[in-house]
Image 1 (tube, rainbow, N blue to C red):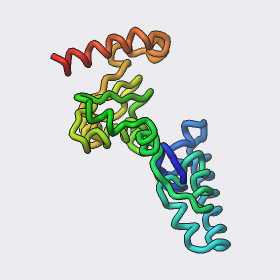
Image 2 (image 1 turned 180 degrees about the vertical axis):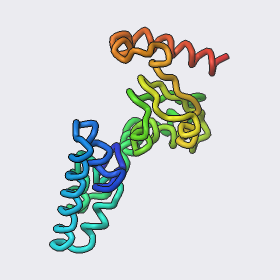
Image 3 (image 1 turned 60 degrees about the vertical axis):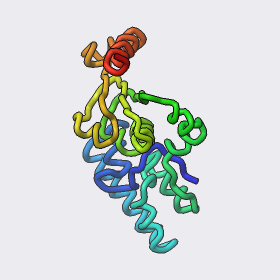
Length: 189
């Protein structure tokens, strides 16, 4: 089994180089080079192991860990979203039955969140059970309608309380307490 918190393919506009390369310091030219190299690698493997190599390169999770997911798929692994594995291990479904509101969170709620990260998985499971979901984050980079489509009713960003990111990091505890008070006022009154 390949359990991964991302569902990106190996290459292309949502592939490992395009999405994660810039986070790691890759320039646009570097991203183009990395993407081309991985596409060439997949093509070479297609000649060696057959058409499954191309299919696996386009599969969810192939881009995990810079392409390690692709290697796991080639070796026979079956992709399963990591959040599903963790929710099973943690007993999320029985806990969800007792919940009125689900609170999830991440440092930055952004487009990567929508590609298999924990908040998206938690929201999907909670929405399927008819529970409201709110998210707490350091930084919010998704529009309310995008959050809604992901099953998140509302997001509370620490940067709404303190715009300076360095201060948010240094004062995370008190800012989280203030955020918890806001959530309680909004959902418990």
